[in-house]
Image (cartoon, rainbow, N blue to C red; front, side, top):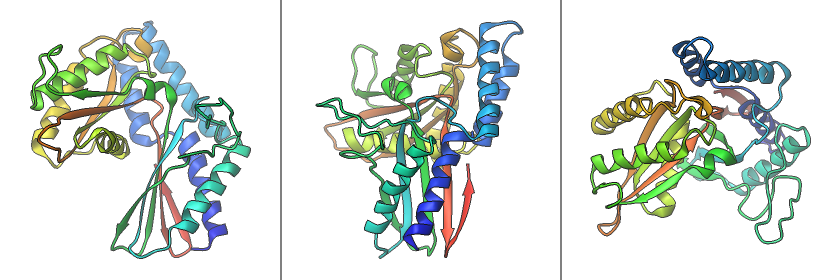
Length: 292
């Protein structure tokens, strides 16, 4: 791939992820709007959300003032050179920030200095995955700070919850995390869970679930059943959009798993806000195809 052309494609992908809501999320939000009682605070919150989506798409401006951290998962033809691609991602990030598709969000944790271009130690930090295809697939997510704050990681067994090292323990952990959030993190959220792994990879697999469509089916039947049960019971909590109360606390629950060490059992929960900003770009040759 020509680096300059790739940079142009990446800027468009960033613009799309930051300003245009995926159709499955928008549909779920509209369903939530119709579910809530007329004149309720919950219905008013949904109305404001839907107006934001329309305005952002029309004017190509960010869906949220916090454009978040950019989470990249990139699938590439095995044997490809990756350093030029990583360089193009950095350059595209700087230019997208200048174009106001991104807010300057990278802050040095020691000095508090913000370089103003969304670069810094560990930023950006793309995940590269080799495959046998000749095409490239760029998956991008904008993960806001508010929803990141209410993410959680549980170490089972947890005597406080009465949660053991099994799927019932996972169920109790997730339900507790949603209850503790109490609408913070900009509910209704998408609750993405990683079972197993270590403290690092558990959260990686949890965040990868955010790229799944809301209407997909988990190939693991046990996890598919648990997803449906948690979706139903999280919405019985009555927390509602933005914590105003109502019937829609979560838009979906998605669960993945990694093998674990015998000594550990982590349940990692990545809470994604209603502004579930994700986009995909597939490049074949020099042509790019975008989707949400």
